[in-house]
Image 1 (cartoon, helix red, strand yellow):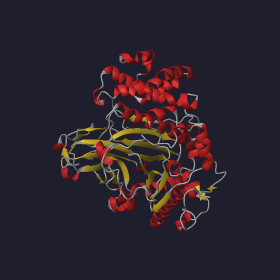
Image 2 (spheres, one colour):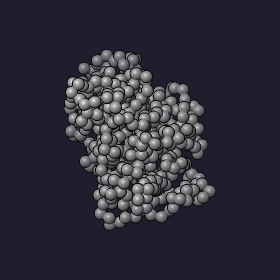
Image 3 (cartoon, helix red, strand yellow):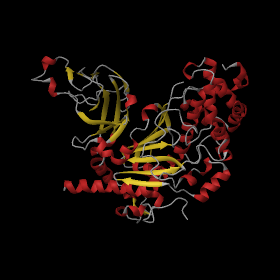
Length: 421
Length: 106
C-alpha cells in the first residue's frame, strides 16, 4: 500500500501516457554520435542558465562561462544602462579569446570599464561595440561598427540569467512556462550567501540528472548517513514522492520533509542536534518576507508533510527549494559523451550570527558527503552501460522524471535529425 | 590564538583553517585517533562557543573569536568521520571529488 495517494490513473507515470511504462534504452548515454546530435538539437537551441544577477552587482561586472558542449565561451556583463548582455568571448580581429587570465580554459570574473584583447589591444565597450583598433590606419576600409562582439540572446527570470545560442528562440519566460510562473515572488533575491561546489564527473550528463530526479535511491545509497535504527526504518519504508508534475519539457517532484526538524531528535547525529541543522537545511527558517505564504507553485500537492520541491528546467538545471527557506541549484555541463562538469550552488539568507553561519556550514558539508556518494556511483554506472551487456532498463513509478528526461531529449534529437534530412 | 575561555582547545589550533578545501584536506590526512581527540574536546564546547560568538557581529569578529569559528568549522567537517563513517573518507566515494570553489567569507 502506498503511504501517499497516487493519482486516479493508477500511477504517476500513467498520467502521462505518451511516456509509456516499458523499459528505457540507455544507448543515449553512451553513443558518441547521439551526444553530437544532442549538442545540436538541445544545447545549441535551448535556454541555459549560466548564473544569477548577484554575480553582476554593478556596471562593468562580468563573468565568463565556458560551454564546451556548444564549443564556445561567453562573456556575461552588466552594461552602463544596467542591462545584462551576453557575448561570445571572441575578438573580432583574429579570433583570440578576449577575456581570460593565465589559463584560457578557466572561467574568470571581475569588473572593468571595457574589454581589451591581450593580442593586439582591440577594445570593446560593455555593450559589445568595437571602440578602438590599434594602428587603425593600417587596415583596409575597416568600419568599426561592423566588428562589435557577437551577441547571444540573454534574458533574466527572477534573477536567474539565461542564454540561448538560437537567435530565433521563444522568449525565456514563455519557455520556462507554468513552473516558473508558479515560483514568481519567491525571495531568491534575499538568499545571496552562496556555497559553490564543482566536480568533474565521469558519466553522461543525463545520468546525474537521473540521480537527483529520483529519491528512490536515498534510503539505500545513503543508508550509512543516518543513525542505525532510522536507516533500517527508511530502508523498509522506501521512498514515495508527495507529488509529481510535468509541463514538458520541464518537470518537478515534491517530497516530504521529516528531517527539518526531525520529529524525534534521536534519529539525527549529535552535531545536528546541537546546531539544529542538517542536509535539509537549518531547521528554523530565516526571518524574511516571502516565505509565508509561499508562491502557489510550491507544494503543489498541498501536503502537510511537505519538505522540498525539485524542478528540472530542461535541459540541465535543477532548482530545489527547501521548506526552511533556502534553495539550491544543480547544473550539468557536458564535456563529452561520458563526462560532465557538475556544479551545485547552495543559497542562504546571509548569516547574521556565527551560530547561523555554523548551521549553514553543516548543511554545506553534509551536502558534499551525499554528493560524493552520488558522483562516484555514476562513474560505476557509466562504465557498465558502456559494456552494452544490457541496454534496456526498467524504471519504476518513482523514476517518472528520468523517463521524461530521456524521452524529451530523444524527441528533440529526432525532430532535429528529421528536419535536417 | 583563541578566546581565553576556550584555552583547552589551544592544542588543536592546527585545525584553524581558512577554507573548506584546507579543512577537508586535513581531515583526509588525519588518523581517526587524531580526529577523535579533537572531537572529544571540541564537541562539548560547540554550544558554548556558539553562545560566545553570538555576542559579536559576524562581520566584526575579533581575531581570537574568528579563529574559534574557523576551528568549529573544522569540527563540523570531522563530525562525519567521527559520528558516522569511522573513517576519514566518505564510503563508496572512491576517486570522486567535489571542490568548494566559492564559500561565504568570515
